[in-house]
Image 1: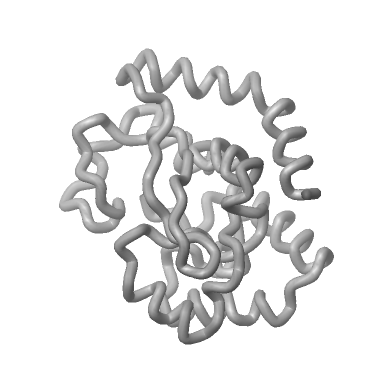
Image 2: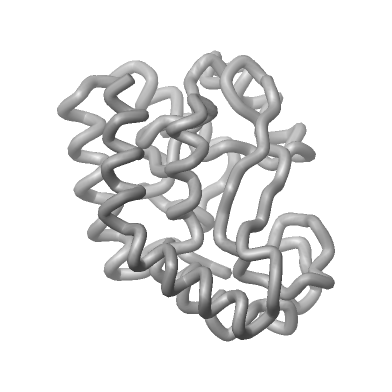
Length: 183
């Protein structure tokens, strides 16, 4: 409940920024403003994640690292909103809906069976996915799936209000430094 209330508050606080990003996407590439995609949630359930659209309309619906030349698909504003993680602001809607929390493993893509097999084996699939997490601030796109799940399992064992707060603070530092962002 606290996650949802805080998400509503942040949505209100960031509404001017959300409006600016929405207008920039609209001017550059039209509607839709949001990108939605099926993601894996708690207990291997599925939900639709909301993000600001950072790529052109004709982009194949696959993970960015699987695209031959991802830069050809990125919107001009897309590069900026990804680097600053502003594309994740609409995840607040997912928190309000109860699909996500602020801290937990990042939700896997619907087709990341390799990652989900590791998460199920480690019991990490029982955690609600988060906007940020222990693996996010310890390598993000730069670590292997095995290392990611190891960090997520460590998070599950250490989960507490203070540990979550530490992760949130470290996330802001990582975003400011654009640490671990490949695309």
